[in-house]
Image 1 (tube, rainbow, N blue to C red):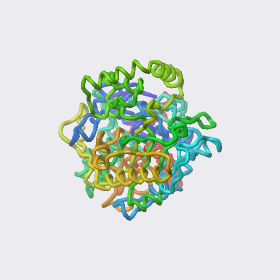
Image 2: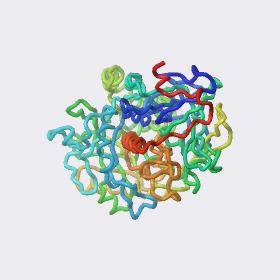
Image 3: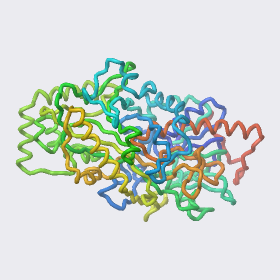
Image 4: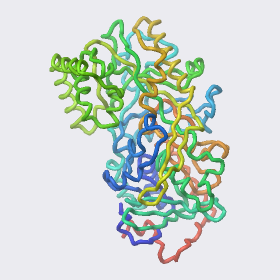
Length: 577
């Protein structure tokens, strides 16, 4: 594990595989190559920790600041990438997510879920999320308590679970394994600012690497993999214009389009006929993994409602409403000025309150001192101190009231896009501009799913969901694009006119350039993307191993370097020296 700032200016490095970006995808791929005989160079822009000058390279512009967070939020430019700040939620995509749905334009993957299943198993292991089992019965045992007693529905499943990582920081967790692999070189503070194509534009000849200290290096490799996330991948492709003036892979203006996140929010007030039969907390699997139930719209119901994928969890009541009578919730409201931006935005709904509201919250705190103290002790014991942390705040309202926390698929939309904007960063790269948009299909998904759930709860006689249907769109867009889920900007498909990579994640028309990122997802599902990102990265690693074996058997020889041979350094020589 070396530092690019320590290498000679102008140094030219050579490897069999160059992976750009040491986050979840890049580190997972590199680990798969360990001991393979292939020389792997893993380039990371940052160092081992958070560095303000490096993080500032993420800054850019957004079309509507109310609908999309600043581009340097929710992402980390360092070893481990955004796994250094993630919540650890692991969920695979569903069968229907890979299918072309007649009611959803631009849907459909070039392969089915079965293609990823073997890699999901390994991805679960790397995330330290236990076995690949996402049903409550198989994970928790037949005696596990139901989520809502008496709830039986053909539209919603209550048997699915989410599994939680430690959460595992991939940089910290796997640094020693990367160092121990003699065929892998990790180069920190190495910012790739351009990919250079051969004159025909069909192969990457090399990459330009720069440091914030002013050094410039070159990299040559048989295969290049971009594992830089759903936004930075777009920037690098569009900014590399030495042969294709519109950028690499962008002959049909597809790079950066179809930008999706997720539609998420909280809505309504839930009350239950028998509150004692309701369980909205975390379970622990037989191998000690935190798991949580959710209500999932079935594939048949999605087709019936002509909706996208949708899940919901039971959530504490709105913090801003003191009617929950819960001391801790009121304490969170009163302490909102001290809560980080990413969490305060969702905790407090963007709403303020007058003096009477503040006094009502103070009263809740004073009336519930023991509940608040018990929670703080639990948080210290199960969240602050252990390595495997209690995943999130779970609070039972003293008034036995809940809200509905939902997470919905965003429909692919070519008008939602990421482009190069105005201004340049400290390395001279053009900054990004994000114009994230949602569609009528996104609104329909949430409207119909919430209405169907309310009707099912009434039909089963187990509870009541009270909400104003006229507020659904405002509730689902209250926080705008959901956090760090940057999906679809270099989507996968068979037609270069509507996709950027093929089914092997290879950029159309460029023989040795691949992408490992949620940017290749054609659709977003309801699931957090990390587990599927890793599964796709592992699949790509397996493909590159087979491809290398075929090329070696055909006596493939990489093109000679354009600079003097004596200046080329193989990664194995860097490692051994």
